[in-house]
Image (cartoon, rainbow, N blue to C red; front, side, top):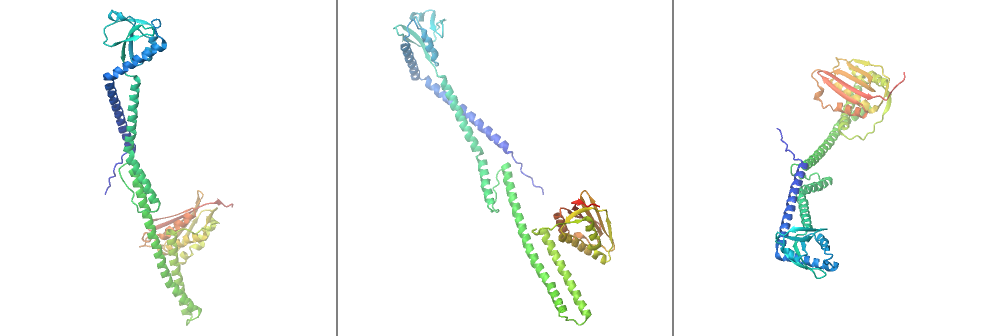
Length: 443
């Protein structure tokens, strides 16, 4: 059954779209504010009262200028400087009153007199009295101050900017609230309440982050559940093993008591008691080995390994001559193919013996005594490799077992910075141990 995953939207694309929408809205509002402001200004300027006030103010300023600068007919050109300062006033001065009705009219500009035809502009003209009492005419028209347009633009930009920021904030506010919510939920999970369900909303990268947090939380819960079950199984195993150990141990103590008190009829009965003691002792060893192996694979490792150095040659000599003595005692043959060894390794003798005991136990249970046991050893690439090969009894298979003994060996060899591997091809079974070499001995 295939599960189709939802396609996640890109958070970056969403933010870009929000920014574009906010920007368009801001520009629209800015333009709208400018249009409304201009319309209001034009309505105000178009009223008669406003125009009359502006004209009267302009004439008052002109009169004050003439008085303060004592403008007469001799220095009438000073009026040109006043006209230049009035940025929102159109004015033409007529020195000859009767010339208003002639073909040419004289007016003052910045620095010269210019003759223009009078075509009847329709603009009103006003009497202006100079300082010496001379009357001149002024064709005057007041229009809007250009600075007002700047103020309108600034107001439009400010309103557009405010709308842009507020709308963008409103659009991303849900994302921010979701992120803050995840932050609070992480605090709840961090406090130890792993039963709390993380809120999953939307389908973007933030949603993926929330799903990852939820999956991580569920994984931790599963691990804790497995740990609790493993601890429970360990307790049950220890309880069961304690009960199983007590039965043969009680029998062993009973037989030893009979032997100690010499409560046997003859030599044959004594040998029978000793044989029972031997059987119970091996039964206890087998149970203790199983308990040790289970603890080594699944339990905590509080034991500190005690390593010491040994030559590879001595290790292989002990392996071939004494460790597999039980195999030879049962009628099996041993073939050792060992290269010249000159290296030194570090081992923990107690735990290495556990590895050998596991191998011997497997040989007794599954090994075919009719086939030779082969031991091969060689040094290569700063590593000592030991291969142990044999044939499995017909109708037996290592796959039928829990392989806990092999995993025990694998863990012990890992503590030795080496490796332990096994393989099976048909009835042929091979185990390989590797040790890192410290150095080579001098010969």
